[in-house]
Length: 98
Ligand code: SF4
Image 1 (cartoon, protein in one colour):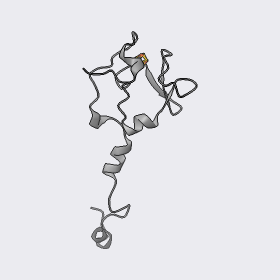
Image 2 (cartoon, protein in one colour):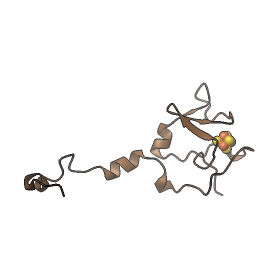
Image 3 (tube, helix red, strand yellow):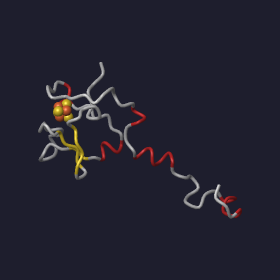
Image 4 (spheres, helix red, strand yellow):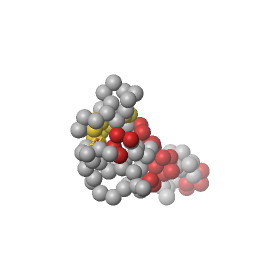
């Protein structure tokens, strides 16, 4: 069974580094206001919260987001130049940008 996630509900909002439900449902019992850290979104965590599974206010924005499209922390790592900011050694001596 496909689980609902925060990626699909239009009521999941991000502000001030936190993820909140604009319908007022607590997404976490660990924080005082029920919000989650946006770092979980950055990591591409699944975010299939129990509170969302039977929620009467779930408002789907479309089909499930594929796992490879979730998050951005891992995307930064894969596009980073393995040779650093100056490029490959032979590119530096050639004096041109490839
Ligand atoms: S499914 Fe319900 S609890 Fe989850 S984000 Fe949407 S409105 Fe909030």
